[in-house]
Length: 542
Image (cartoon, rainbow, N blue to C red; front, side, top):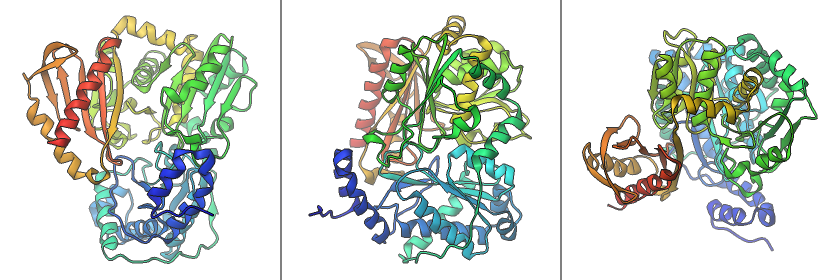
């Protein structure tokens, strides 16, 4: 007899406790997703709306979110339409919307409802099927579409689903768009309607991966011939871990098949083998093992998250997170490819890139967390264009590329970097550190009660800046130091007198608090994490 559950959260807890034994319970999650009509409060965070499948992310709520977007289209004033990059609702209907999903549980079914509701309003739709985030950005630009809807929660665990919205420039929607959508969606939620599943007419399908290859070739920042010739030379051993995500098959379409390329975890697995499918150090263990066993002159391993917008690197000698690779990318694109401009980085990113940029006299643009904040420096008509834009959470884009973070362009850049410099990534990084100085960044975080998500958590954490003003004494690793500077552009960033720092900020999409730290010695990281966690818990409990 099947076990009975009171709600989807309870069922998910059972599933995730032992994914091999409990995967059959996904059928009950589907029942919750289809039958649960309880409304929720929708918030579009740094990368859209996310929720637990069957709890708040249900078919009824996805339909309500879609209707809210349609209402925003219909009511949109001049400011909203300008931010969207369209003339009016008729322009949206004509130019159309690209709809697709990653390969998570029920993704295709959720997308079907979105498409049906858009069609009911006479809005042209394209269905892209299983696609990754950067492909939507490319597709919007190449097709001159009004926007895209990408059903993905990015790197979140298996119990989550998500809803990303990108306007006509292909970048993440800014607050001037999402605030309007949120208002319309939550107005409908307040009435607690039950929305019937719409009928879906004939749908135009689109191959976004084909468009992506054309786009990269036409933009020319990446030299695909150099990359393909290098792979064909047999000098590079490449391992790509797709972690059962939608990036599977994407690199093959661009790089071709080769006996020197290994693709890991490409099979269907809605539960990701029981792991959080993010580009973490632990999740790269299999990649590292294969690289260490290989004898090629050059080696590269990467892990890509399920929607293809985050990436982490290794060459078997060391792992290279984006805090380092983004700085390397700046140096490579400026020094080896002659690209001029600025560097855009989020406030939680390592100062390693600052050291390189200052030495090369490259302007630095430091923004709030969230890739959408790089838009002013990524547009083709920007007065200051970013050579590279990257964030500490493994996202990157480069000059003359999309406004979205892109793991595939990160992969291609790494291969061209090795082919051009004739150095493995760790060798190149060590050379740069010897020249510009050593930095040791890291990030972590803690979970909090779901009831604290949003403003309640923000209010509690705001007390930290009041308590730890410039000059405040802090004991760190038994040493008495003081607060040298305080930055509150996004969360609270406390810079200490020894030039180490830590930043505390709430997640925009999950019941979590994020910690970003940087020590000037490898040994100093643990003490900074402990300090950040203690200060956070004190603020929450006060």
